[in-house]
Length: 292
Image (cartoon, rainbow, N blue to C red):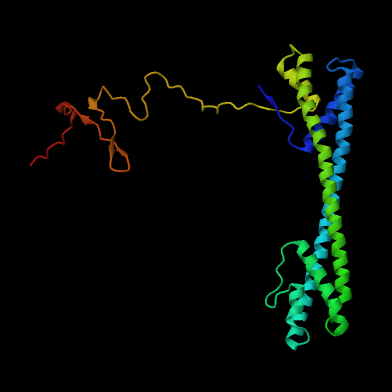
């Protein structure tokens, strides 16, 4: 017998609860007593709550996707600014304008590019660089050329704001998911409860008709696993010879020898039938002799 398919996604839950609530209300208006009014009201209330929680959750995810893109662009701009200033500071060090301790205070390597892997590391590096460059630029105004210290401050402020908004967006998504999980569980519970209720209300109804009524409430079915169908067997008439072992011809007096396995490839070789006795002379026609 076909089995009911479980709800496996929010799309399935939304479709089921909408169809079930509408079918329950229509049946009550038509006078069908499949479900009581309390169950129909529960389906309608759960539909509204689930739809509202689902909308909040997907709106939060959409906002998060946009903020992630903005945050990535801000970090890329800040990363390019920090690397460019690092090259400029290394050049200033080689000219002797700044000492090695300046790079050490900024925690920037003398050889190689800064290889930070986290966004927060780039924000902290930019903050350290801005602080020390502000102190050094008072003594050496020509220390920072392009990008300027004002540009570094602007890029760091934008990246800080994007990071703050990203953290808030992630928190909103987590809160919306926490609110949606109980609604998901309620829809799943009604999916199982309503199926038992409909089967009890339509007890004695033939299975095909019962499944048709349950499909009106949003249920889907799948067939059970059955054995693979066997290929049809062709009946052989009596006395017919088997293909692998032909029946001996009794009239010819020949002997049938079964196939024998030969060699490593299991090739079957048929031995020709051998006559038990030579044919009678009367049946052999001799050519006439020529007269001399």
